Image (cartoon, rainbow, N blue to C red; front, side, top):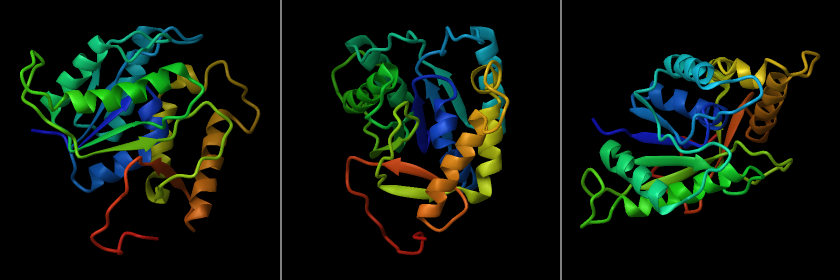
Length: 230
């Protein structure tokens, strides 16, 4: 069955950090949701491929995802090459998601910037005919951009999703990646996870809720009803 949403992440844990709340909402609404990690995220100081695979499996189960894959591209040297574009476009043609999600396009991390360029190019390539890519032509309707940035910046999102009711589950999914966010980090408060809660509370304050998750779009958004606004 086709996916409704495919969240594409440079590394395992980026999807949980930036889009965990939205994924939990989509699943609750009955949508089919998947994550495609572009790399295995290694090497890192306290991880290895086996540890990262176990952490990813735990987070995937907690989020109840319908699909999780890894494109096997190189960590730390991710590039939006023609080969990578074709490989990603082939996955899009096979999974046929209505929406794609990609990292916000402004970031200090070169892998994140490359991932965004790769997603945008692969979305276009996925609709091409007369190609040896697997599957049949397909063009996802939209790309939505989640925030998982390494710059100390306060962006102006297109909208903020109220994630108050799913925040604890999102935090638990992020905490599955102990090799990245717990081991080797300072234990005195505020910890890394404390800071994430503070950021979510900041975004929630902007819309009058407890916790929020910011999202961006390069294209205008359309509404059929005002009922979803807070």
